[in-house]
Length: 198
Image (cartoon, rainbow, N blue to C red; front, top):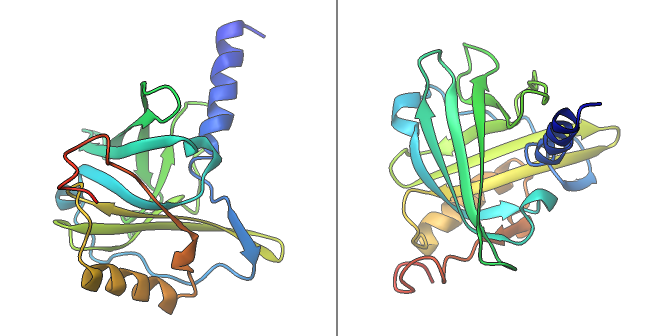
């Protein structure tokens, strides 16, 4: 196998783990609805990661943010950036988000390599957003008697939400049996002014 092809294959395997849940527990994936109607034009732009479920591929990465840009073919360009906590070096990866069903544009499949297959069920479900402050992204894969979940709370600004807003977001997730205790908070203390994110 050509070395460049082998490297790309390994990269595709690594980043496929980014888009599949790694919080596994007994039970059935919840029947959680996506946002409808969903306005893609209002959703694209910059989002800062406030909290996420554990993902091995993101372990040790902080200052995480995502920039979404509409492509001319109906897909969305995805650029994820962050900082390696161990080295202080910036890290980034680019991918493409595609709606898996034109009737449900908030259910997307994100791929980071041409070798990574499109998930027909989607691996990026926008389940709650007001477009200007927050978004909840979730996905779940059934694995026998277990469910494998992935979730993010994204913010338009690197600033902690109020307790009232955060409580409302947590309450929304609990309604569908999704445990907010699985969230890991993203630190921005060394990325921006401490007065903004604390």
